[in-house]
Image 1 (cartoon, helix red, strand yellow):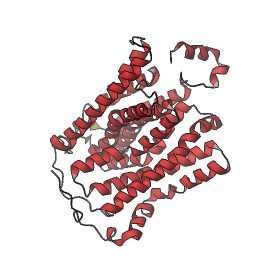
Image 2: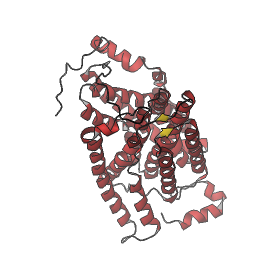
Image 3: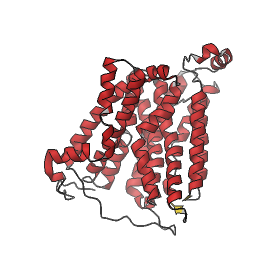
Image 4: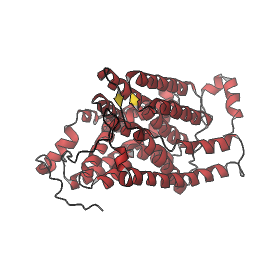
Length: 406
């Protein structure tokens, strides 16, 4: 059992400077904070011009540093809580931005945006983030084979999306439309229990299995020397609340601008949801994964990429289904046939790349190229549930969309 003392670990000089020191560390120290003014600019444009395309782009850029700072505040608070509670904090707030955006979209009844944006986060982490990290690490360390703990490469939770989609498209439900949502809600509760068990296994009972390994493939013990916190415990809690509130406010403007941005920029909503939202929203997380790969710390890289995918698939998506249930929204795990097939193929490709426990630039390049194919496919894909203007000009596509039951 962990004990928590406000005086441990020692707080450095920056944290003892009070409000001014805290403001400097959180708002000015990181270079990514140069993007913070884009958030207020987006809100200003929303009321002055109603140009949804610009509001969407500026909101997306403005959320990027907020997501990074939210992760920073979580890490600072974890210094005072011990490894288990710290791991739970990182698991909860690690994808807080995606959760907040999804809840706003749920309130607006934009079920497909929720599904596709969360699916896009999984695809982005597994293909783009991991691919860029492997490629960058392989170029920097081209004279050696980079290794990682294969336990970290475990891909969990994605199979939960297959059954509702298959049930829907085979028309094998007891009550068409009702059995699907009931199965999704039941499966979501089971997945949340499974995720809690996963956290217990990883953070408490078998945490030694997740230690980094050396070049000989042997587990290394984790050093007890941790970095000192830069802000105090209460400052970290206050900043978590402030940053979460600001992300919530900006997410509302972002969600409101999605459809207008799709029309003005002539981009499918599916492409915006699956590709643009995850790439820009997780840019800071992506950069950290690449940085650790270049430092030959692939276990941390996999913790960011695969760990984030696991959090989204086993926690965030089931959580959104339960929240939708409470709101009276028909949020389910039926991600449609095209999206489900894309996710299934992606899991197979990534599992194949990770099975040896080694990484190089060629594997990274292949993952990046796979992501480009996925991005192109969503650019030309017509969502069966959307009322796309393209269907007016291409009647054959209209017929194809009508054949698929929604």
